[in-house]
Length: 320
Image 1 (cartoon, helix red, strand yellow):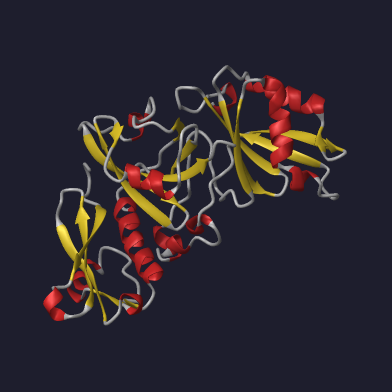
Image 2 (cartoon, rainbow, N blue to C red):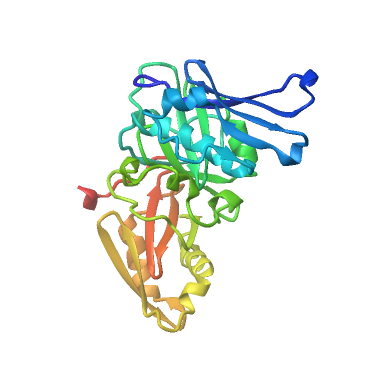
């Protein structure tokens, strides 16, 4: 990476068998392949290990990274979250705000993706973040390489899945994975509160920002997507995914937002009023191959993002 040397890998080395103890050494490797001993685990049985941060690592990096006050763990998940927070922050400290795109699952980086980095070199690292976990992924000659297969495997990604990348910072992407039904793939790390960001002091957190609009809130209630052809099925997809929301007797309308514009769609008998919804679709000027991503950030408010077939967000004149 041009401006820093973030942590991109965790390498584990078991203790010497002659020591007759379980556990081992955890090293954090940087993008330039520098290795730093971060922690040690020890125990008589694999199920009862104690994890402890390396005193040398703490002394060296406590002024650079938010190391935290808890430096001994008896829970692997909490220890892993600590390692993830160090990787996350090592990317965070030198990143700028970016944009958003979507890509069907292929090995190649989507068209226009490289404009988010302005990199002169053929290889660099980005960080994919989903809830409480992160995946550093190396890009070589405009192709996803190191750790990309691990990211796909961890999410159970298959053919015809969609991945939405929201650029939180220049190198960091909040990721939403949608299955073949275009519903968000839920894993244990994206359910509940965001423990990872709680490990980072508030002063280090910036707004999740996308150009030309902002995503200031997590899509806490629901995320889904739909293809734009045939158009007469889009309303049905919306109503099926929002079934519980639309059946709320106190809800009289929903608000659809794209960038700074809003469309207020009245509800009639737990359905979106056809005339108003068709007007909304008409003003989107949808084309064959377009993809709609919908995030429900609060009850009755839907954030809409339209992507072109090449993967980039479709720009509208009201963004300017």
